[in-house]
Length: 302
Ligand code: MN
Image (cartoon, protein in one colour):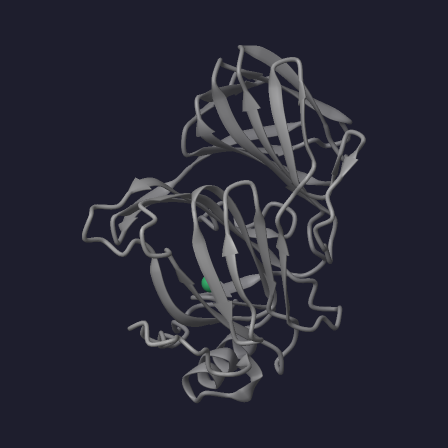
């Protein structure tokens, strides 16, 4: 078993503290999970509009939003407009290949003054033909055992299975540990796992401890489970998945399997290609359509 701790790069995005755990230098992915931000908890001032992200595109990935506190409006270029609330998942699929893509906006509703969320991306298997789509999961499997609360956001865990659409095998479980104890978590031998600590701390079998905004990265290497000791009042998210059979390149909001495909996505978005669907009707809100920056000279070249 291989276990290590990854530390977040933290920044302030319009008054929201954001801890980025993935991608980072030594660890780009956990299975197909290829991007992980812990956003908040944030309290907005009276004059703040909160999160206001203008139209921006995605390719070859799914955006997976796990809401903990607050509310966010999602609106996309397929015409979906959906409010997400705590304990809900929004899953937006960009589709695969050089002719698919999607765009969306994200906005805090008027009057909402908090935000706390885990924002993930899932790289799509680029050997599958996948069309753009949007799904909202208002209710997910939720249960308690031995003073631990579980919510299954995607995949299967124990005898529970979430309804969330997947294109490669994944799991995502929100776990609240109320009293200090050791959890035995089931593992698939060839998968990769990450434990995002949202609050509190966990210690792995080899004595490595992860605190808030740290990620324990675990490769089971043939083991069918791993043990974690959590201190009282610990909130974490277990992520896991089977590695994709191809490399995942990321630039800005795009995923692709080659530098050429990333350059194509940048050009297509900046030239208003119909690949990204319809222009989003913003109903008069002053959001700006974002501009894709050019792919850096060295990215994706060996
Ligand atoms: Mn987005």
